[in-house]
Length: 347
Image 1 (cartoon, rainbow, N blue to C red):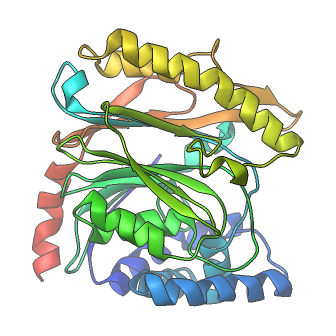
Image 2 (tube, rainbow, N blue to C red):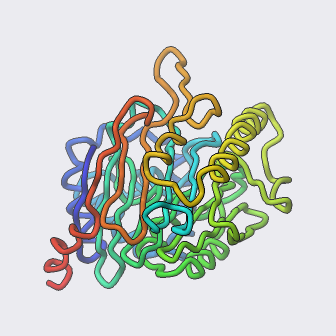
């Protein structure tokens, strides 16, 4: 696991990140001229909707010695086409602690768990946040929580790469840096051009839960009225179901979702009012209902490369490196780190 602790202007943060990544630049894939041109088309959309993040990318390029178009293509354009991941949100009305919870299983290659990076960042004039990403290039986020108590993550659902847009991992970084409320975040997600189908899930320190099902053709925001929601593999709002894939991959996603949904609804119904982190962990590592799965293709193990639990209002995250059925969750401080960053952010 890696950790990044930085504050200041976006470019300066990127420059420091780039210097630490220089020794590992061989991890980057090689891109064709066609892919590089495609990447810059996506970069153009980010320049419209989240421009300051490109300052950080430029700093990463300068610090690492990697050409900017290569880093832009790697961070800003599509790179995988399989529905994956699970996120659930629980309001404080239903937890033992009284604090809300956002929990995630990140479904990907298990061996890649070693590249998990915790990013404690405070861009100049922006919000402090803890975010989760992979080691290269440390700009985008797969989820996190900011100082306003807004926690967000998402799952991939369907894929319609009909044109450039703002990738989900870039959108979440922008939200963590800029949005204090769920309403602000939902408005941003509704406005940006989409690259593929993504189901976002957000919760704030008051326990408000919002699901944003975002597709290139339509985006729908739904607020939970029972203190619980989850997203995984598919759109499930009636008006969004038609955008789910109908091919064999879509059938696989449907079967996984069909096992997870009744399990989670029953789990919440039986435990609401008494839920703690151990109960959440038990749910995340459940094999019988396909919450935690393991597949081996002869080369790599595909399953869960990390899991985490965020609790808006508390100064820690619970993080598991690797599948939660095989590894322990560790407590990671969040907001005490910002006190270490504040002097630099004022400089």
